Image (tube, rainbow, N blue to C red; front, side, top):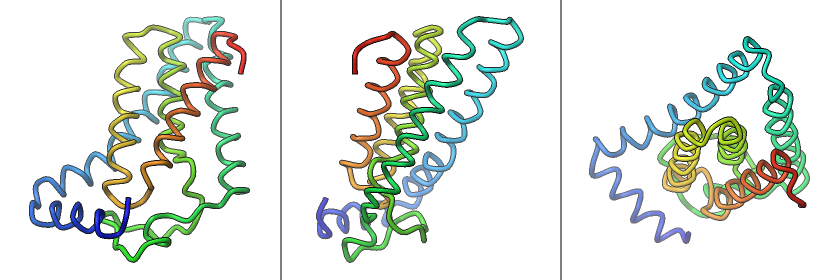
Length: 166
């Protein structure tokens, strides 16, 4: 996304306070829903002494660790650092934009929940798609950051959970 393209998006949201509020709410609540559902799912598995507990725990944790290390090493700038733009969501964090850890985590957790039941995984994937759309619109990630986060989460998650070759 170029600076003029983002500025058009920014002006569109600023001219529509209700939609800006919805964007900010989605940015705040979609990750919280996913991050609250995950420990609840783990607790349910532990309560039932389900053998899948360890896979559902370690696959997202390992993926999160890999994304975090890669981001630290790669240290890509965020849109508001690389372009002359003001994000719609206040951020002061510098670098570590690629890939989006929010989106990667949502898709890793979505894979883990899908492994338990597609009916559990689907809403988490939808929340991940929402995050993948909201974060670039808000100006805190480039679209490539969220696309890479989703791709990593899906590939790593399904490969580890289902024993597919990476």
